[in-house]
Amino acid sequence: MDVIIPPPGEVINKRLIDTLPGGKIGTVQRALFAAPQGGSMVDKSTSNLEHFIIRQQRLHPEATGEFSSLFSNITFASKIISREVSKAGLVEILGMTGKTNVQGEAVQKLDAFAQETIVKIMMRGGTLCVMASEEQETVIPVPEPYTRGKYVLVFDPLDGSSNIDANVSIGTLFGIYRRKTISTGECTPSDVLQPAKSLVAAGYIVYGSSTMLVYTTGQGVHGFTLDPSVGEFLLSHEEIEIPKRGSIYSCNEANFPLWSEGVRRYVADFKAKPERQAKSRYIGSLVADFHRTLLYGGIFLYPRDKRYPTGKLRLLYEAGPLSFLAQQAGGRGSDGVKPIVDIVPDKVHQRTSLFIGSEEDVLEAEDYIKRFGDSL
Ligand code: AHG
Ligand code: MN
Ligand code: MN
Image (cartoon, rainbow, N blue to C red):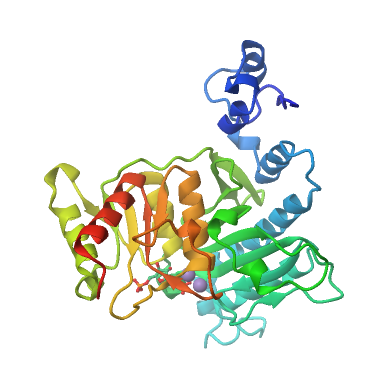
């Protein structure tokens, strides 16, 4: 096996070390990996996303660079969306009626803008054969004369969009699959309708007090913060691991009367145990609620209820990619009965119940549902 040894002071990926012979870092390699000044081995000020991805690509000698190119197109689109999100309030003021801006251009709704930006950039990237988005009823095939690639992109261009006017964090969610049909022809529904465990990569961008991109390719979960002064995502959170249990529960508690007995009891007991020191947090933007859960632990739940009997959140581009991420970070995503990553979607906009976050908290929710039932 080829061992890739990064130059001194470079980013060290724990999973990369695990691939070294014997799964351990040797004395010579440790010396090579060590930061010149001691302390952190990661020089965050100069570790950008592109650099990080190229390093991960070197772990796969068979890689053609197509995936790296796909990923750099996603980050490019996210920077454009981030720019637009950050001036959303300004556009309202300068746009007067909200219909035209100072240049006389139409002011689009941000979710339509995000959708168009992603589709335009990804369509010409040459790495995809089909896309599926929350904002479009049917799948979006890459037509001739564009070059078709071997990947499939599923995405929610702007999640939490009802929060935009209140300046609350919103986000973009994405998942990348490899197409199943080996051909350069058109994709089939089976290329899109894959379970989240088949994802090649998944991630999100949260447009908050700063813009952050968090992603996994199955080799750990890593977070990058956009430095607007240089226009680059810099490594800020390497190897994120979700705590095994947390004290935060996150749900729209106004739906309490609409939930099943199992879910009502779970939430009531979560709050009741004094040793737990429970805290309630709910932003109402899935990406932002998930991001907090990933960093602090606890559980986010949007169970099925009397209003949404099959759940509100979407399997393919919301629950699926986030459950894959949670699992990669040592957490769990469930529909209350089974792992979300195992569910094979029947349709693009299929909905699901979602319980996601710290492994022990999600397992406990599953246990309540088993014991007290999930009928509405
Ligand atoms: P979107 O803005 O993409 O349609 O998603 C909204 C979702 C999700 O972001 C959030 O977790 C949930 O809707 C909030 O729903 P409630 O307003 O019912 O709590
Ligand atoms: Mn959404
Ligand atoms: Mn959306």
